Image (cartoon, rainbow, N blue to C red):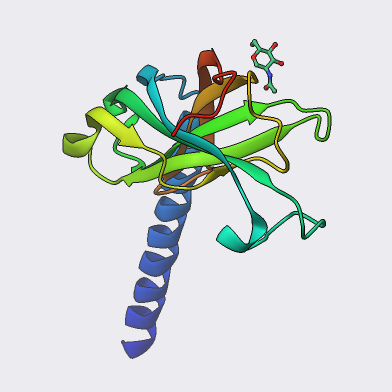
Length: 183
Ligand SMILES: *[C@@H]1O[C@H](CO)[C@@H](O)[C@H](O)[C@H]1NC(C)=O
């Protein structure tokens, strides 16, 4: 008696794990085909501050030359981001960011993340902000920002309950920095 109960419990357990594995496989397959796009509107409203900062004004990170002066900018964006199309039964959370990309003589590619957020519920997935200021410092490695063309990109990454992470990005604006510093 005890023996057959054990076998039954065991096969039930096997069935449950198989079912769970199937759900995980299905989830990752549907995620591969998940092509929903968020609705993105981003506008640089103003450059509120733009100036060279000396090294003792902030902690040095990637720069090797310690006496170097770096351009720093503070921006104000208008952001409307509808992430609701990205939410499905398999969505755990969505990470979004605003990134600045630009080219300088010094670096072929500069990518600076200016702002980010994590959305965990569909009911909170419509973001509509009149004023978003950069949360992370917009600092150049040097003083190359005056008159520089900067691409502003919204990136998103969907973390599913089961399956692989997937994401996308949208280049929203290409804006030239002011030719002169702003105070
Ligand atoms: C900025 O966007 C333009 C237009 O898509 C592209 O040609 C250029 O390579 C981008 N620059 C950078 C640094 O990402």
